[in-house]
Every structure is written in structure tokens, then in C-alpha cells.
Amino acid sequence: MNQQLSTEGNLANQRKVAEQTIRDYPSPELESIRFTSEGHVNGAGDWNANAIVTIEGKEYRELLGIHLSGGDIFPTLPPGSMAGPVTVTYSDGTSEVMK
Image 1: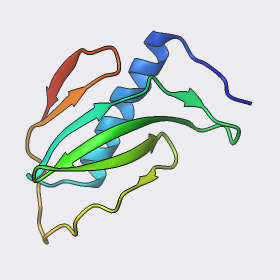
Image 2 (image 1 turned 135 degrees about the vertical axis):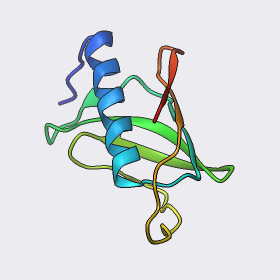
Image 3 (image 1 turned 45 degrees about the vertical axis):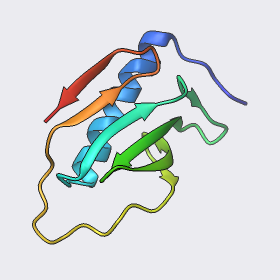
């Protein structure tokens, strides 16, 4: 059974998983994360949302979740990579740059 959160709750979760994605894939080539759905809690109890992640100009379709994420495979990170600024666009159209 899918559970719906408030828009505010979904936006907070989008921000949380964007931060997780940047932390887990610290690459200066990670340009942007754009959420294409508001998000929901799936039958396993994990919240997730569809997103497009842009790395070096290429778009990767992802399902970003609080506990599990999946989708297209990102390029291998070079050793010692550090995150640069990443533009995050939320499902409501607002955006911010995370560093």
C-alpha cells in the first residue's frame, strides 16, 4: 500500500536524499538532481521519488530513496573525488545549490 506524505514532508525527504546522493557520490561532475515526482512511501515502508541526475551532461534516471536507491549506473568515481556545487530542483519547481 502506498502512503502519501504532505507536500512539505515530501520536499523535506527530497532534500534529505539529495544530500545523501551528493555525499555518496562526491564528484565535481555531478551537476544536478531534478525530482520528477513528489515521492511516496512504498509497500516496504521506504520513501522514494523519481529523479533525473545529471553527471557530465548525461542524464541518469533514478529512484532515490531514504534507505534504498536504484536506477542507471553512475560512472566510476576517480580516487579522491570531492563534491562540487550541485543544483537540486525539487518537485514543486523550487531549487537550491548544495555544496
